[in-house]
Image (tube, rainbow, N blue to C red; front, side, top):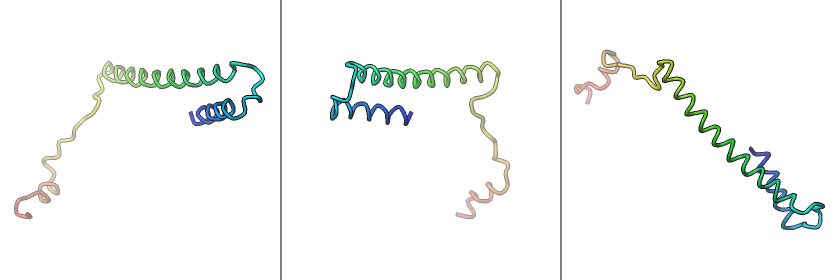
Length: 85
């Protein structure tokens, strides 16, 4: 991701400051468009895979999160006891 952002900045700067160095017209616009939409597609695939992993975890019967009942722990009960306050 950093590499594509860096190359996009270099290409954009070359298009603005040194346009005579670009041999083929439209090349910069094409590459910048491909880099942008490639990043958007990668981001959306990541979101879809996160959602898919959530569905698989639910289908397997595994909880998304779990809680631990610690009301019987003596150390915690002593720490929050009203006698200490």
